[in-house]
Amino acid sequence: MILAVIIIYLALVLSLGILSHKFFRNTGEDYFVASRNISWFMLLMSLFGTHMTAFSILGASGEAYRRGIGVFALMASSSAIIVPCVFLFIGTRLWKIGKKFGYVTQVQFFRDRWESNGLGLLLFIVLVLLLIPYLLIGVMGGGDTISKITENAIPQWVGGLLISAVVLCYVIYSGMRGTAWVNTFQTLVFMILGGVTFVVIIYRMGGFSTALSKVDTSLLRQADHIKPLELLTYTCIPLSVGMFPHIFSHCLTAKDVGTFRYPIILYPVCIAIVWVPSVLLGILGNVDFPALKGPEVNSVLIQMIRQHAPGVLAGFLGAGVFAAIMSSLDSQTLSLGSMFTNDIVRPYLRKGGKEQMTEKQQVWVGRLFVIAIISITYIISLIAKPSIFRLAIWSFTGFSGLFPIVVAALFWKGSTKHGVLASIFSVILLWLYFFLRYWQTSGYTVGGTGIMPVAVIILVSTLTLIIVSLLTKPPSSETIDRYFNT
Amino acid sequence: MKTTHSWILYILLLVLFILHNDFWFWETSHIVLGLPIGLLYHIVFCFAASVLMYSLVKFMWREK
Image (cartoon, rainbow over all chains, first blue to last red; front, side, top):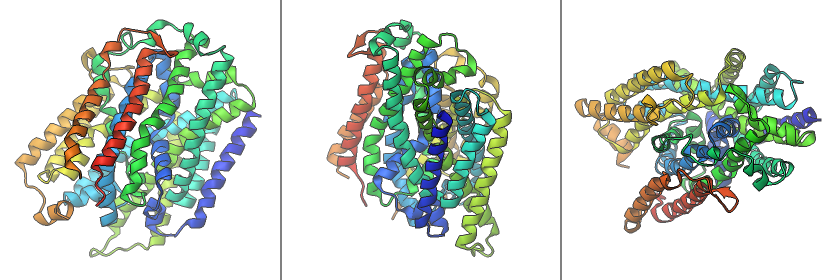
């Protein structure tokens, strides 16, 4: 029965994605950014659904299981203030520039802004490499969820394959419009089913107060599991939204700049709606499953669903988890397809400054890259087995480290391509240093002080960008005028 | 941009950011309104962030 519910849900998602193809205009702009015609509600749901992934559903409950209520402050309420600010001060400006110059990827903007193809290529490589672990989170989380919720009736590799196939079908067929439609539906599903999961499990546990009274009190305060400096520096992590290629793509889909208003206002509320149940259920998982260790911790939510809500309900609740996972996976793969097409194939095929590809060819190249990306990610997911949560944090850390670049592009006329190149290299070096040495250390902070590596990376990349820019030649006055004096 | 409101809103944004670091509830696990106080505080914080975003959008929106 659980399996039937999950299959029906996936069929529903697929149908919705395919249905949106009716509005498809067969142009590159329509395939990659839905002809910049998305309404505020769909923008809110797709931005939020894309941002929330297996990380915020499975990873958050897993971390709350180990570290208690402080996880909400670390990861949710910090995003509640930082992410809307990024949309307000960065996202709206990127939308205007994207609309004015016809950009569909970040790299197009940065390449023109600093008059450097080499910079664009380097940034492209870095963004793709950082996005792959993030994609893996989705495929692995999805496969793991199906496997656990069906008690291994469907193995993890089949589950991952099923999710990848569904996402692949509607992304290649309907592009960004299909992705936005499906994201809106799936975000509503995981927000509603998250609440339902919480109420059902709490009811079966004998009420919230009863369940909470059985929890170790150290999980109900922050002091025992989180250092003050960790809370302070963790606020750098949500800055990653400013450099996520998939969030950039969704920002460009807005009908006009006013479309951002309600998403900015309502984003913090959406965060509370999704994270409060996830964190509380993670904490309460200690009552039923007190001895989970390692990557098993990330399955605490699934285990609770299985224990307290078996049968059809488990199928629905499992569908809620898939909704969160797929609503990110689709946007990420589409943005990668868009980047390959618009940042690599189109510029390098151009002859004498003239476009060599028709709109139809652009769409097909994008589709082929989406197929390649999902296939490669799926194959890697069969080999790699690290904890979902650790992968996410390191991916976010890299994107956050690049955040000063988008700020410089929008606000600092004096920033130079050498400054930006130096900044990117500083991020690469520091990220590799921290990742290679400490990725297996759960909850690693610099020297045990509580300072997150991301804060060090952002500080160094900002200083590098400023110092090298001051010492080198800025872009031509025509370029500066193009972006600042219009 | 309505500059008269801008500085107040920027200060409020900074204050809210500082208030995120709730060291005053660091050591306590008291239950208030059925929830641990440290968690309740951050839920309220999310709603306060939403109100501040409303003010920023209302008074500082750049339509052009």
